[in-house]
Length: 134
Image (cartoon, rainbow, N blue to C red; front, side):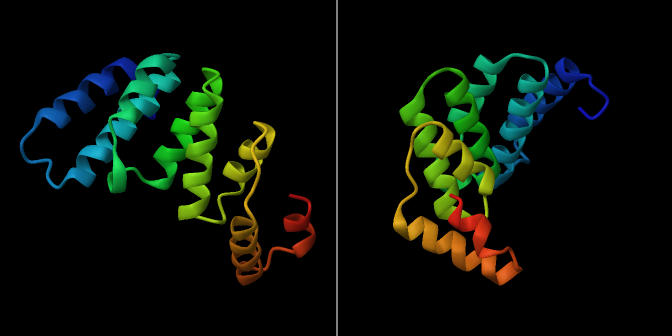
């Protein structure tokens, strides 16, 4: 994958998915996310979207949720994108990229989300001025 051999990486990841030794489901979700990244890198966003959509519930980590939101945004599925960005922020208030994308897509940050972002930012030393700009 790192060398730009996306099609080859995708095939290897697919073989890994079918291997019975890939339990628990979080490992499967990780492989699916890698396949989706390979699809994105090769320009196949539709397949990446389908792959990320196949990761459900607690298996879907923050990075996968954010990637899914970006793909929805690219495909003009604005409501779905906003939902992904909100889910990302609920799980990680420091996911500033998700906050920016949510706002740029016309969504709003809930007061509780802003409070979470503010608390998290002050914990790691990010100035309030940046949070207030949101």
